[in-house]
Image (tube, rainbow, N blue to C red):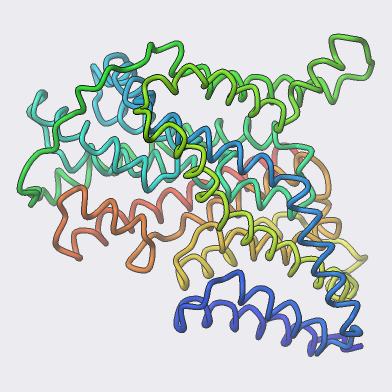
Amino acid sequence: MIEGPLLLVVILLAVVLIVVGASVFKVHPFIMLLIASLLVGIVVGIPAIKVVGFINDGFGSIIGGIGIVIILGSILGVILEKSGAAVKIAEFILQTIGRKSPELGIGFLGALVSIPVFCDSGFIILSRLCHVMAQKRNIAAGSLFLSLAGGMYTTHTLVPPTPGPIAAAGNLGGESYLGLVIISGLLISIPVVLIAVGYSKYIFKKYPYESELNDTPILSDQSLPSLGLSMSPIFIPLILIGLGSVAQFVGFRNGLIDALVFFGNPVIALLAGLLIAVPLLKYIGKVERSSSFQEGLVQAGPVLILTGAGAAFGAVLKATPMAQMVEGWLSGGDADGIYFILAGFVFTAILKTSQGSTTSAMVITSSILGPLLPLGGLDNPTGIVLMVAAIGGGGMTVSHANDSFFWVVAQFSGIKDIKVAYRTITLMSLLQGCTILFISILAFLVLL
């Protein structure tokens, strides 16, 4: 079996193959991950039949752990989108936080809505609010659009049930700590959204632009659900998962603790959220009502197969001498975990920048680093949470022309000049990603 530096070369070539295949030849990352998994295993010297077994085991284990969570989260997001619940939540936030600071309100609105709703579709829905708000307040629309994009991108990379953080947590062995990942992701999101809002205000004062949209979209006049009904499917599952995570660390057991652990399981919590969302269906047209569930399943499909393929790649890497090789390079067999956090951020940022997909970059990086966490002393709840955050920060760095979200934000903001888009969207994502890295390192120094 291949060992030493040559093994590292094989793994690096496999990653290059994945990136080139996905970005240059436009082959889906799922196929490239499977091909890379097979090639790495066979070239390293693992018997071919065993390589296939590792691929199947890795794929099945991660889907068994978080697959249902991804599906339920996708369906819930579609229902919130189509029922008008997202717009109702938007109205409330803009009337409270957004009354004094519209950019702040729209930024945190984006962060909240992007937890269950895919950020591309969420931005399209809420962009119309930016138009209306800019007209009512007589302020520049650009800062509102960018604040919204920054808020949505933040939770997209940090807070489950968004696919990237779930996949990263699963590959790092943290599927049992999703509650902690959610809580930490929400806390880290606060300063990251503030950075986005501050940059949005600054950049559009320094480089103002006129939106080139020909007309202003008008808010839907559909009957909207109540605020309580709109927010319950989001907040109740998050609260249940948070309580369940706390209960898992309680040193004793009784009926209440066991109930909190059960209902705090992400599958049960999101299923409860979906049941709570059933009354929202009456706000959806009869034709779209049944298709909402189908659309949620369709959205979840690509995420599931990509997550599974990433886990398969990770399973093959675990079967190689990679961990032993790295351990041999480290004095005493251990290294400061801060280097692993830096590696998680930098490697994910390279993948994100080169091939555009945040989820794909997070899946690949977490697959590679998962087997190495014990070497950095990060194979514990706190270490896993910080690694997920660092990888999420890298997955945000940077959004540019090969990222679909970049074009969604530019198009619906009316930005036609690509230089303006790079100066605003791309630089903001860089600042946000670096902020997440700084917070992750600071938390490591304090907590570990």
